[in-house]
Length: 212
Image 1: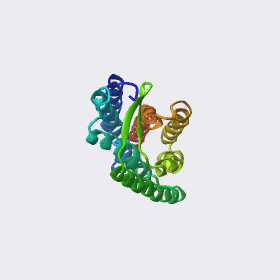
Image 2: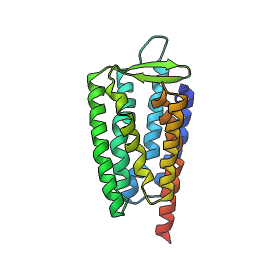
Image 3: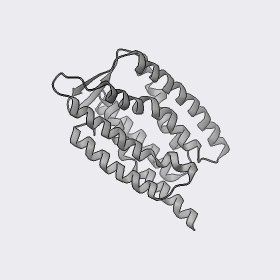
Image 4: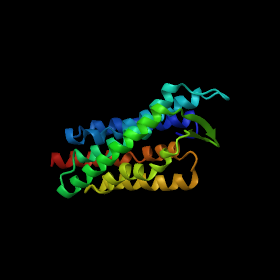
């Protein structure tokens, strides 16, 4: 978690267990990307745990860890989120909306990738959380579109647990922006990861429906 190395690794273990339980439900191929979300979140939390361990006084964490963390946080999710829902959503109007969100997500991912490659990120401790900062202002201007691409796909799906997952992610975003503004990226990723239980519930429900 964003508050300490121990908390990050604990969160990674718990969410990883949820991810393993989700895959144990043997999801359909078209739901596999969505089912992998808890394990990806677990890996994300583990990376941040390593970043915490590497912080020693004024020493900077290894660049590979920071790049790995920011790749998942800023580049991976805007594209993967709409794609993971598009793969299993059947409603035509919803699919059109998801294609639009996917295009927006690819745009966000592309811009964030350029920023990550062309600018240096500084990781600092603010209170009991981590702040990932760059000198590029355009990054902040993308925050609204980033939020849309990483939450709206879940909210427009016709499955209740998928919608609940999107609602939990959106709610956690609002809270972290209000309470943890400077470290919102780190804190939001943690609370979004905790919402992974809804992914398990959706995959289990679909598996049960297939058996009946």
